[in-house]
Amino acid sequence: MNAVEYHPIGIIHTPFKTPEGTPIQPPGGMDDCAVVEVFPEHVEGLRDIEGFSHIILLYHCHLSGPVRLTVKPFLDDALHGLFATRAPARPNAIGLSVVRLLRVEGGSLFIREVDIVDGAPLLDIKPYVPKFDSRASERTGWIEKQAHRTEQARDDGRFSGK
Ligand SMILES: C[S@@+](CC[C@H](N)C(=O)[O-])C[C@H]1O[C@@H](n2cnc3c(N)ncnc32)[C@H](O)[C@@H]1O
Image 1 (cartoon, rainbow, N blue to C red):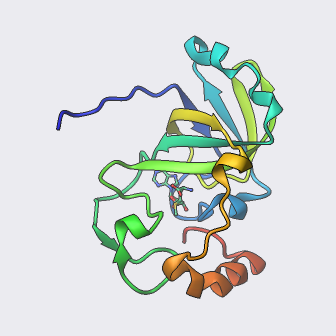
Image 2 (cartoon, rainbow, N blue to C red):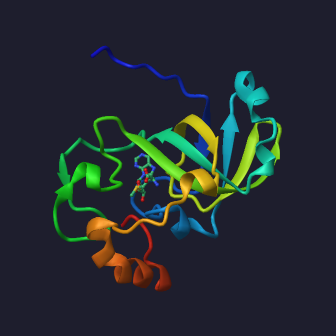
Image 3 (cartoon, helix red, strand yellow):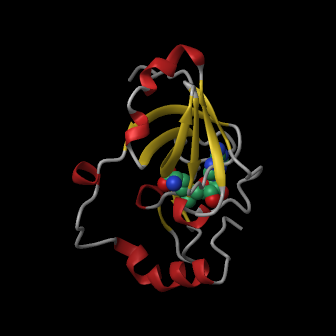
């Protein structure tokens, strides 16, 4: 198939300078604030976004490593298929994070609950709508067995990408 080309619509500024030490998922970055800078030509598209408590950010994981189709994810010691994980080193290194929107000032979105490395090129923003995006799922695969580990890591402050 032909290549698909996207151009960043902004840039994500966060306190995390390297993948190591960045929270594994947004809830791990509960207390950390960040700013999404939307480029001037796209700012008009932000109208009404302040009405949403959470937004979905799609971005390029610009510091991701070489692609491997099986990976040991942060929360497990066993190998899993890449597409059964949220590991950033993917054939198309697209990250997806649901973050809390604190306020909007012009083209700047002030956010919290961030698991994104500083400087990530922003590809898209969508409103998070529980009716569309939240499901009562019956199975969560290998992560089910690691639920206790996630909680433990959160509790003792090790909920990072180290
Ligand atoms: C497990 S991934 C999950 C990312 C996103 N929530 C998702 O599900 O697509 C989170 C980890 O990706 C890495 N990461 C985040 N932003 C990145 C970037 N711009 N480039 C490379 N790695 C990144 C950090 O190590 C972070 O701990």
